[in-house]
Image (cartoon, rainbow, N blue to C red; front, side, top):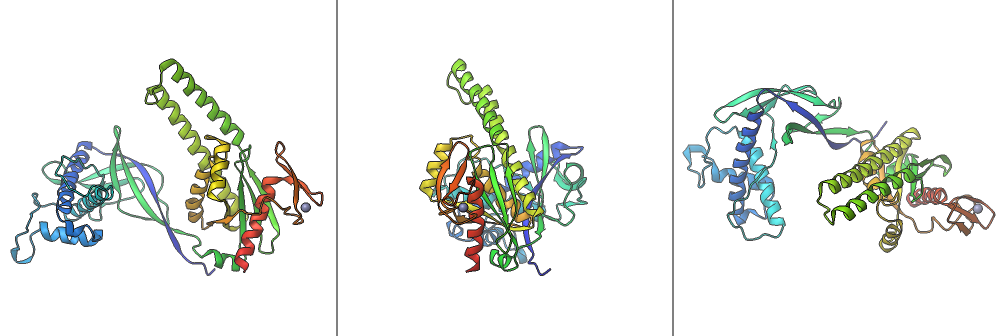
Length: 398
Ligand SMILES: [Zn+2]
């Protein structure tokens, strides 16, 4: 097939085990000292602030490294024999930290004791023998550079992915290896091209009931291929309520201390629950799209004022409130699966019957039902999703 190739980057995580974790720590420390050196150097040279990172790096290297014919650098790097790729990674981290410092509106640079702690990024030549099971890193033991073999525990690197520079971070008592992986996505053609090619559309509607979302798949002739409700909303809302009650109770008995251990535990619980459902629902939607070969997901877009009001009405920790996260997750999960996510204005999708186009004359809020002037009735959210699919198709056919 004549499909365009696109890419997406995701980060894979591994637990890292090695014989000398203290060398990872000393490498980290050295890295941060070089980072700080370049951070200061960058901030002291205002003429760099408008330049991009690559130009800045080149300029800083000029300032800090001896050039050809023994040119004496203006501000020599105070360490010798630092591997080029190690120094460069640390310098880039320093530039990034300085840029972020400036972007926070701190124009005046005061030499204060800023502690930089960026994770060590291992550029090429700083690592070798890399697979899903092991990696050999070039580390600083405080005196010498050494190659250290490390075991990795975690996911498999995707077979068709291209791993990029990994980084090591200390998380609690463990060291983790984070690896950005560039993977090809199955289809990177535009929405227009997909519509032309006759791909199916999956239109969604989010609800505050048991269904987080309702989906309708519409083919190139405007015929409906499948319908699905993505449930679990009631259970989610119930769980959230129970946790919130516990938070309320602990507040009553322990006083107002949201930072308290107990409260933090509950808030984490709430966050995990929310993440879990947003991931689950978005994953199920993508799978549904794959099952029915939908190349485009159409999400309803509302006026800002309207959606603000609806969200307030639905309340925090409600199924509808979760739709914001589901939308975000769909964007990147869809892209990875070769599905484009777009927004289509929802105006009109709730006021007519998808079956006959007739006006909706009555709605039963309790049963979430609509009644049209021709006597059709059904789920109002599904009806809106069906109308959205047709509207989406119509917009691109013009
Ligand atoms: Zn009707």
